[in-house]
Image (cartoon, rainbow, N blue to C red; front, side, top):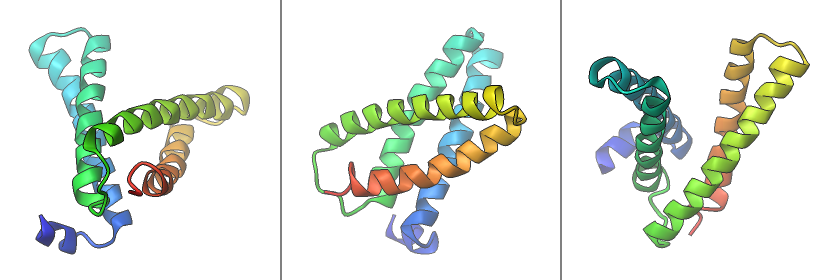
Length: 131
């Protein structure tokens, strides 16, 4: 694991890699559960979100914020709460950009992904994984 961390550069780079892997997992598992397993789209997405959430937490805890010494369980619960809050803010921002300002939905999503990924990196590093 140390060699991977050394190869992947800074904590910010590792955060981007973990976040991208989580996004791919979310997308791929949503399709897998629906197309292969036959689960409804809504449940497929929910299952994929739950799995990606755990994957993202483990990736951040093990690969990005490796110096953290706080309780895993406590950090996981805080992470889940923070993630729910971020998702709500992301959706409200999407509504503001797309529905109110008329920005194309894909442009709005791209802007939100970039801005909130940077925000999450700073927030998680200064709060949940700071200990």
